[in-house]
Image (cartoon, rainbow, N blue to C red; front, side, top):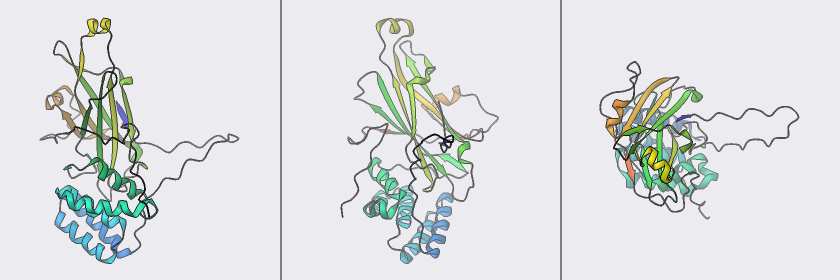
Amino acid sequence: MVARAPVAPAAAPAGDLAMPPPTPVAPPAVADPRSERMITEARKARVAGDMDQAILKLENALTQSPDDPTVHYELGLVHEQMGVFDVAAAHYEKVFQMGASEAGALYERAAGKLRDGFQDEQVPLGKLSLGRVRIFKDPNAEEGQRVILTIPVQKAPGEDLELDQISVTVLFFNRNSQGEILQLEDKSWVTEQWVTLPFDFAGGEENLRMTYVIPTQDIQQERLFGDRTYYGQVVSLQYKGQVLDVQAWPRDLAARIPQQSGNAPGGDQMLPEFQDTLPSDIDPNYPLLPPLPTE
């Protein structure tokens, strides 16, 4: 299953009565140019792995602009990446309390962080990388089996990329009743959705959600094909056809994927995070945000 970056809809032909597309909510502009410069420098330091420098820059920006949502959101990202989750949550909560009117698109992103929890994500050292894939096996699926993947795609700041050239490929694998590991062939079992629109990497990360449903088999199908259960997946991130990052789980699945001229990164791969529950107020296909804070 290949998920490509969303593109803007084509203009309606002349004479057609079409509703204009909704105006996407953008992150607010940083009012103080000194703070804006320090935020940019902090982002570069964070991606390079220099957290001390990133915090120093952001603390200076916070002194200049104590109520700027971008400063608080960036401080949340840095502390989350360092594993200091209580401090990260405090900064995300600050952005969330500002509401959409003040924080713009950062309100939704902060709400998502507070809603979904945190994970120790890998720093993107190149143009793009995969964050830690989150796996949720739905125990309450009404029919068959349902597995939900949340796949973070991270972009280094300052990289001028053609966003429509970004794609994510997910190959799902099942185990049958004979113990064989087989790649999924019926792509209708998978649906995809970019859940952090607009797709602009304004916060350095976008999230793709893949929902994989193995339908219940009747007796005849089970006799023909055997029982099937979810085994794992291989997630590949590509830019202009070049493989930039790969995560396979379980790890033995990596050996089943043909090498692509040495493009796929080698070495140790990041392990996924297995989630036991999703918040009860979220539809996994169309996640809801918490309500706006009351004045």
